[in-house]
Each structure stands twice: as C-alpha cells, then as structure tokens.
Length: 189
Image (cartoon, rainbow, N blue to C red; front, side):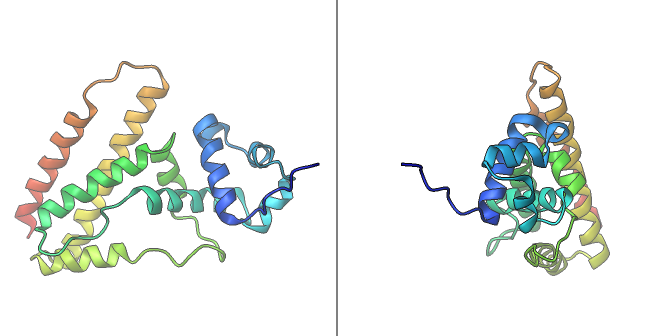
C-alpha cells in the first residue's frame, strides 16, 4: 500500500528549503532541488511563495524567528548588556544555516503579500535605547552598526569555513569587536 504524502504547507516548504540550503549553499539552491527534496512538482511551491526571492526572504525570516532568542530587552536589563546579548544571539542564528549571513543580507528584506507582517522588535529596540538615553537617530544607527558588524563577521566566518580555512577562535575575535563597538556607543548616549 502506497504511503499517503503529507500535505504541503508553508512550514513544510520552509523546512525543506532549510535542508536544501544546508546541503547546497545559497549558490546551489534551486526551486527544482527543493521540489525534488519535497517530492512535489516545482509549481506546487508557487502556491506558497510567488518567487524564489520570496521563498528565500521567508526562509531568512524563519531562521531568525526560530534561532534568534534575544531580540528584545529583558526587564531591568542595561542597554549595553542588551546590545551584547542581542548581537550574540543574532550571530548564533546566522550560523544556524549554511550561508546564513548571505541569506540574511541578500533576502531578509524580500516581502510578499503572503509573508507575516514581521516583527516589531526593531521598534521595541529603538524605544528601549531611547529610554536608556540615546537620541532616536543614534539608537537606529547603533542597532544598524552592530547588525552590520555581525552580518559581516559571520559572512567572513562562513566563507572561510566553506573555503576550507583552518578555524581560529572566532568567538574571541567576534567578542573583541562587539565589545569595542558597544563601549564606543556609550559616548553616543
């Protein structure tokens, strides 16, 4: 007796996309490979995602939703402790999938009418930093600088691994730059 195929939904497509991305990397990722992995015809994917870009944008958002666990400040947390914890968690999320930094940098801004509205974390982060003494513009720039540092660091980290370079103490290097940035932001309050 043939086994009944599970219903294909957005969550299943995203799980499959993550699997294919981890196997092929972003340069080898195709909707054809994803359809083959899911054992469906390629057009079935487009019921859930209009384009490959929308699919990868949704995957970038899904990775952050599942892996980034420190995007909001905790009660009583100091601004500098939050920025450190948030950046570390963001880095962990980007490292959770192959080419995670490239996926985020290239596709996290892709939007679809089928995508959820998105997180209100950036607004909450800005409000928190303003409440901690930052001007609104400085809060935005501080978050952007740390985010871009993290993405850039992970991009180089993942590229080195893909090219077979010997791993060095990436954690120590990341922490050095991150702490220097956060300490420097104290003068912007």
